[in-house]
Image (cartoon, rainbow, N blue to C red):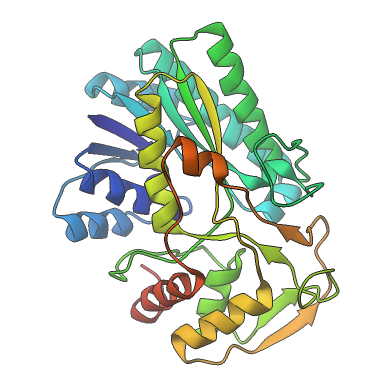
Length: 335
């Protein structure tokens, strides 16, 4: 079975590409490498001894995209490609709306022309915004608080409308919580451009001496220790969720939506303590002001994915931290 993975050289994309190769799929990747490196795919091929077909193209280039579809025969698409930094989306909303929406529309129009009607979409728990309650079920109201989250929700709506217009489509909307960790080999992991936006790569870069200390945004939330609580999921567990989602699409379910998380929340302090235990390195940190729009607690109710996809997150938070440190310590400068 031939699968196209857009954004497949990125953090989640590279781990998912590996899982699909190891499961026996033929994998083609499109990535513009704006926030990723081709080295990740070279290493994926080294780990599993199988080849990836790679195109360095942008989904905004519809002519190049059409040419790729003409040269290949795809059975399904896993769609990761998009800009993903919440803060940057607030500063540059037009960039995010143009890139994420136009790129997706180009992809869907191309899929329609070439009669490829199965897609797994990389959505996000940011679509829930500041949730009214936790744990979060898929039925909870969606109210994103930033342009990045709004692009994810708009794309979900586009995909639902597409299905209404043509029920031959099968679509999985996967709402991720907080992916962390790395492949146990230490060969692939998270390598963000510049100062990381997410907690674990920031902690890991402090641990290797790239950054002097960690800033914790707020210590006065109504949580166990005053710091924000999030649902952290190992990136390999997340990648395996995409395999299960595609298997589900082969049963022609129409549009399905799943939370991919562990169902357990950890505070920033608890993650720091777990990382210190995993690495043996003390992480200096300072408390600073809350960030606008940050919620006190966000964690998933993954029951639907557990029962419907037969998928459950397997790896605990200490393993997530050990694998993060294994990646960062062997690759202090990233790829």
